[in-house]
Length: 259
Image 1 (cartoon, helix red, strand yellow):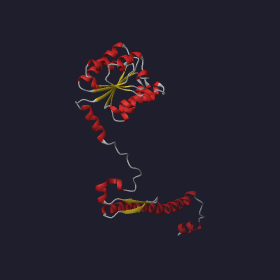
Image 2 (cartoon, one colour):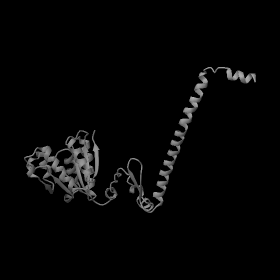
Image 3 (cartoon, helix red, strand yellow):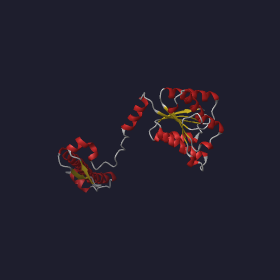
């Protein structure tokens, strides 16, 4: 009894810890339903999305679902098997198609072909005596194996090609295409060209500068041949341009750098 009376009569002192504990419990009790409810809602949305995807892929009819940023159509099971994933609207862009294999096969067949071919020789005028002898032997071998050789009428490489082809004594397998008329060529070239049976002149280019006329002449030769053999330096711009144009038209190009 004295204890009960004492308890009732004793004034309650302010204890900060006693005041904070109910407040902390109250805050945590307020947050826990919100967080747990949000977690349950997130799991529910994930399950709904998974279920929607499962339904779309298992159904034979294409269905769509809303992701919050727009509707997405998923392909049917048959479309996925036949077309792959590309049938879905989620595909942003198509992959670039690889180049046709027929071009590479044609080029490979041309390389492996052992029969005679039309071969165009191009090269620089500034060439040493040793290099000219090597080109002359190469041209001689090409004509001897019944290949038709095309070249131009300048000094250096072209002159070596003409001399080698003439040594093979098969004049019908050598054709010289001139960038301008024969009278426009140097005297030493005219003397050599007098021995050639097939000479094609371009007098309509006489009014053009020699560089521009040579470019047109090279294009004409490239259009006539199947393979290009070129001897050039790294700064031979016109010859390198001719080789690039020949590659673009799927010609076989063999380029020898002299430096």
